[in-house]
Length: 277
Ligand code: UTP
Image (tube, rainbow, N blue to C red):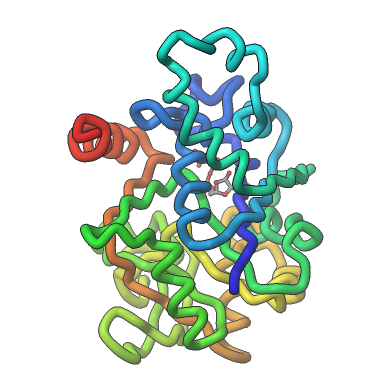
């Protein structure tokens, strides 16, 4: 049973400046919901109701979003607009939220390590909310699919997707032995390789299930690519000493950390979800 999900949201979101100057990237709305709410809904659908955020300076809007706004509720009472708050009220009522600050932006690995005391000694999920994942037609979210894999194999699982060869340099990339359709045992992992050096075109996206020994592995991981502590490097150690699985998920993922991906996501959600009610 995986109960906890960690959201590292401390990054600066520089690709979205000036929009992200005073507002967290994770609060950018895709149609009418902020990115981070989609992520928390996905976690809730997968059965996780303890949500931890690794935040930073200037991210208070996220904590406010997952808290009740009494003034607002009073204001719109009887106006017919109450239903616009239903989805967020449901999340607030059914989940617990905890926050911890990452004092130095030392990379995703470091952000996850900052969540050690929030996550404790149990397996947990990690969601990068700027990767928006829309479930496949059967409606099963990506985290939900990954929980099933974890329950079967009891080791860390990363979600991967095939990307064009000229884009692999933007991602952590895996090499692996295919155990069954779409499920790989990881043999190698490289963070942001040169396109010509990448071991495959299977790119890691922002969904992970991690076993708690990852924290010791991160502690032993020196800064890597771009001088940041990379979760990819810690996961490679886990793969070499034990097992890490890479899962080609069902569904559509949008890179909402980039302007193009964000606009595509907005159009997709508006046409396929919002307009259809
Ligand atoms: P990104 O590199 O995609 O996010 O990190 P960013 O740094 O905010 O965006 P750009 O590149 O400047 O536009 C992936 C995720 O890891 C988190 C980010 O918040 C994002 O969700 N992160 C990254 C941290 O929480 N702490 C860090 O030190 C680095």
